[in-house]
Length: 532
Image (cartoon, rainbow, N blue to C red; front, side, top):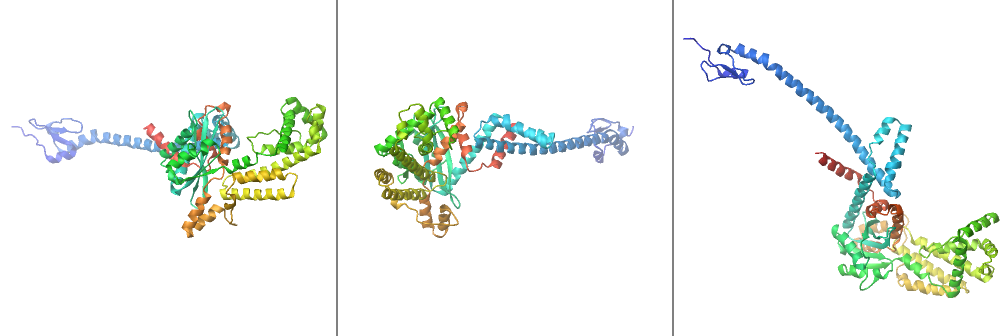
């Protein structure tokens, strides 16, 4: 009988096993080849492994090495691309914030800012820098999204600060924009780390009617959405409209139902305007005549041009009169002052046109009354200006009104001819400011402002400091809302009457900067999830 070679277990190291046939044959479990029984020798099996499989392993290793190099290269390119896209995203947010602050249409970024930046970079640096700027996303929709993101973040920051402060004051006012939509604006004043700050809280559109119920619903809904407690609202400042101040059905009455301890203040600037509105019949007649003269000259284009030529030829300091409106508090004094300064030119112009009011400008008593009104309204304008501005505390405003009332008494004692008007004016101020004597500011400070001073006091005397700061929280006027309405008129013009005003206005007037790092991280996370 022939002798056959047998399979040994150590042949496994050469990647071989044996078949179940007789005689047994070596079976390569890498490629499946079956060799002859004579090849069941270590040298033959090693030769098969070296010649047929090691070259494949080498090629496979080279393949994976090449793919690994390609992967590392793509990672480097991705890292560089990510760095560029991060800078472009940051630039997109920064430019969008500038657009919001400038109150310009969103298209200005893509139509003007970006092309101008590209031209400047290519001219002053190189084309590579210009190409990099072209990657910044600044389309109309993109700018709108960026502004919305920043507005939401700003409101979130304000809400967080309100919750930490524990108490805050509210300022409210409502107006109508260019498209006829009613807009409710709210500002808050709150205790921050070492001072008292004020900030816009929201701008909400009032859909349908603008009743007290609708206004309260808008505010209450915002409080509920952001988990703000009505008990933390210690003071509300509004204008003197009956819808706001009504004891039974007014907004303040609605707020008192959820917070009985809330205090209300009628805008001091509105009260000052109301107190100075009434005057004696004689002075009121002088004011009406002055308005008629101004309207005759300025309301007709031909008369306006002729009067301007007359002023130019005579070498007058001014070349036109000023119109006024009761809505603009400062305009009346300026209009009368300008008429008084140009009275000679106006008299000559009226005489040339045979106007019946020319006799008024030739009447010494009438001119004297006009001078008194111009001087008096200029004093009121100065008071009005001192009551305006940001970070004005109610105590400071009461001090200024109190000082003006004392001036009235002094003028009344010195000027007998106008004592009746001044006496009535004093009674009007006493009517609108009945608590003025008890609200004077008695303290002085040199190195810090009032709120910072009491924040420092609170550290040593907590109860006293907290009480004083609560007195400084209330708004004295609705000045911030009035100024914001002016911004609203610029942002939502007749050419942009379909704009959603809320977030654009917040981004435009906000003093808190948006957290761009947080917004960019969230935006990049959204892009990553979408790409996956």
